[in-house]
Amino acid sequence: MDGQVQVIKRDTIPPLHEVLAAGEVHGLGELRDFRWSEELRQFMPDTSVFSISWAKLGHREVLETHTHPIQSMMIIYAGSGELIGDLCRPLRPGDVVVVPPGCKHGFIGGPESLWALSIQFGHGLYTEPEKPRVQFVGNGTGTQFETLLAYNRQRMDEFSKRAIFDLLADGTLENPLKRDAYFGYLQIWVNGNQTLLFSRQASCTNQRYAGMFLQHMREEMGHDLLHTERAEEEHSSAATVTSDSQPKPKDALLEAITKWFVYQMFILDDVEKTALIHLVIENASELYHRRAMPVLGKYIKNDYFELHVDADGGHAAMGEALLKGEAPRTYERLKNIVAQGWDMIGAMTDRLVELTRAAREV
View 1 (cartoon, rainbow, N blue to C red):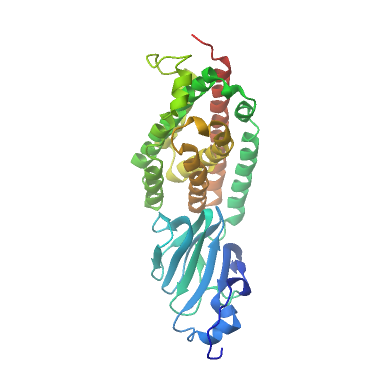
View 2: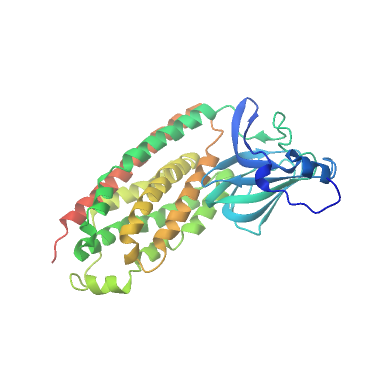
């Protein structure tokens, strides 16, 4: 590079999307090492000093937990995401992630993707893609893990066709009476989810999961109260068909299903709890809130639906990242609990639909 100011555009640097390590292919999102640009390579110091790359993870893309032998930093400049591994926490623009050699870490892209500068103090981790300087945690069990995720996607697709989505689309909830009954019965499930997360935290015994469990609980705290805050016009219309003095809706079946999930927090191990909550509940929640927001968002006073649409996918990905690297027999157990979880979620939403359609003015 001669002695003049130049602008090197990011898109002129070729991207790397995956890497082969220990016989397995691992996704990187999008990585562009500055040394793959002829102009930047000439301008920068020798590789023994430092290396730098553009890095991006799309929504719910995961850079799996890994370690490397040199110091590294990730400077977050746009979007959002999650840090996973030895430390679990959300990431926002302006955060700098400092990673000493040998520490387990990985990243998950948020709803607006995660954009960062990846800096290594020494030769870059992927400067020579055929010789990646990383070791991914849990090599050797990718096939069983992918099989579990494929099964979960199948159950998600089946869930997306259940009666609750017909209820959201057919105009039933435009009726204030039906809508009031719907919100009232759904509150049983919403309240139960708070108990679920508290119970999981109290019963956690594996430090590998403790940080993520705590982060997730903190991010979900208070959502039950948000769900109860109706818009002023909603309160006015509901007053014509119901009374604040009436008891809250109760249903033994809805309560039993909700408490089934809470009970699992005391009989499952931490990896099973992760699968049940993050593969089943969080994915079901994202599917529901995306479809419900255009129909019901105007009846909730705050940003309850927007909050869940933004967060649920990231919460699901947090769990997926922690489930990597388990033994084949573990994935067999996880498939069983995932199957039970989807069955129970389906039963819960079907009962909710039944109660809503049967609601009558008293």
